[in-house]
Every structure is written in C-alpha cells, then in structure tokens.
Image (cartoon, rainbow, N blue to C red; front, side, top):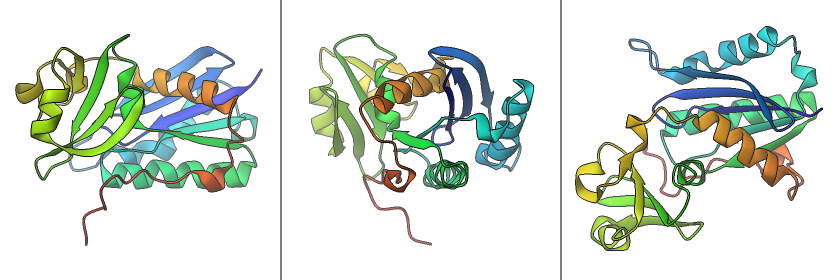
Length: 202
C-alpha cells in the first residue's frame, strides 16, 4: 500500500498528514508558539508522525506539499523540505496550491480569494488560479458565489474565512496529491514555490 506524507506550512497553521492508500492514518495541526513560527516544528513533527505509525522515511512513496500562495517563509520551508526529502529518499513529490486546497471547502460555485496586499487578492475561480487581482474586480467576481477567504478580506467579500474553520486541510492536501500523482510523474525537480507576486526584498 502506498504511503503519502503531506505537509503544509504556508497558511496560519501547520498541517502534517499521513495517508496509507486512500485512508488518512494520522493528521496533526501545529500552531505558532510564542515567537516561533510553526514551520520551525516541521521536521520534528514529521519524525513524530512517522515514528508513531511505525514507519521510516524510506517507507514514504509520495511527498505532497502546499506550494502557496501564503507566508513566504512558510512556502520556502515546506517546498525546501519536500524537495530535499524526495531527493534523498528517491520518491515522488508533488505540490498543490493553497487556493486549490481551500476550494474544496465548498462543493460547488466556489471562489477562493486570499489577501495579496497592495489592494489585491489571490484569486481562484473556475478551477484555475487567476493571479493577484484588484480587490474591486474580485468583489464583483465574488457576487453570487460561495466565497472562501481569510479574516482580512471577510468583511469585504463575505462568505467563510478558512481561518475560522477547523477543516482538515492536511487531509485535503494528501487526497488531492494522490489524485494528481496518477496523472503526473511527480519529479522533485519540478517542485517549486508558487510565487504569484515576488517575495518581499530583504
């Protein structure tokens, strides 16, 4: 049975999920601790998840990670760890956008809009990433849609904020990655951060 290890440090919580075939066997959520950003706990959490399930890193067949958009620090952390692990373990690796992950919170007619600063939002509509779009245009596109957003844009766009739900985003990531792996060669060399806008300098 194939083992999928999925992790995400792009959003406001860290998710580490283990799946055996289609079944989720372990799922952890880590929040920021004091001054430490949650991605600082990624490696230790991965080790703990594998050990708790009687697995070694060599048992992993597919590594899945969120490639963004989200925290630039978080995107760098999880894509780097995924690439290094996949290279060392000689296993498959695949990235999934946080916009696609969040789109699964609503079954139909959904739009995902996340704060991109500079009066823009990262937009996911009609099953594709539209880029960083001006907020006024986003507001129009969100009318009569099931809007998934964040706390910052919630007052403007309405809908639901992913930050206020306890949705199992790590589980969604693992399942999406498994589906995509059937159509993709999943080479770690192709795994790169999704920077829709350039990272801040410095």
